[in-house]
Image (cartoon, rainbow, N blue to C red; front, side, top):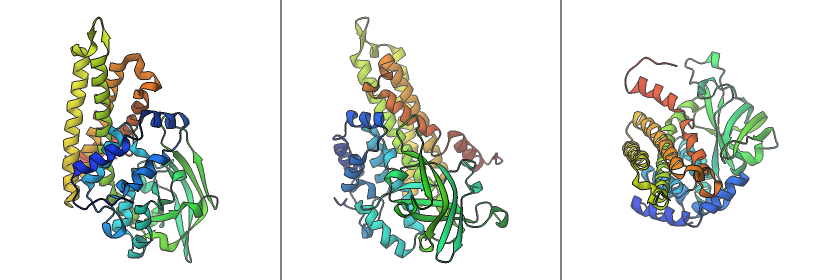
Length: 388
């Protein structure tokens, strides 16, 4: 694996990822989208080059870089026309293991994740009846000797079929028996090779975008007690600890999408001629693209601010959530401006606009909806009463 020097400039990371992505052009992603197939070759190339392990400390074989470098990787993947959703979870799920795992767990897993021997791409949290109300989840993990027995149901869990490990959040103490709703939840490392077919059933869900999404059914799945991360009952705090990184990385992907749409719209507006002049000469075409550009750039500034705070170890919940909100909305605005610029051609798969259009729409809903972010900002930034 190519080692990433510890103090390499962010611009060098960007240049390296951009060069790697050039080998995976529009036709590559278009073919995968048509077949709802996983970008195995791309993920392997990104792993070999060390870009999926930039956040893993050097002592465990990673790049030892900061979140700014991780954002550079994710933005450039999406800016190239690719989809970071195929592998972004490894960036933020790994943080739970790194910050809260035991020394033995880190020695056992992190070097193999960094090298690509193991993939940690699946994050088992969301449930059909709980949604974003995570403390109401019903999947249970009951201790029996040296194992926990897991029963329950998860939904919208991506990349399970293309991962070796999954982080699972389950209730280890019944909700009526805890003082706070967030207590009694625990995080486990699940070896998917041992679990699938031995109580864990995976049902693929076909969606409007190629995201390898599934529903999971646990029936007496045995998870070794040694796979518990941290202290039993404290898992919800561990998950929350990683959500700022998740928000910031997703914001970077949205910025990448936005810049891709704007570049395509500008090129089309210059090239397409109607009534003997480029359509880009018309303010009705110019203005939506220019406004989208301004909003993407503004969103990126908030993303940069959130990243700086995160990398300094300072509180950044408001900034991380704001960055995700603004970037998701800016990328969607850019998508609409691009689609309008292309007109009917934007709906044709060969132009790739409709594929990216579908992909960036997801971020209005997941990994957290814009409405939930607004409730968070109302409460934590503005001091308004809690609304949920």
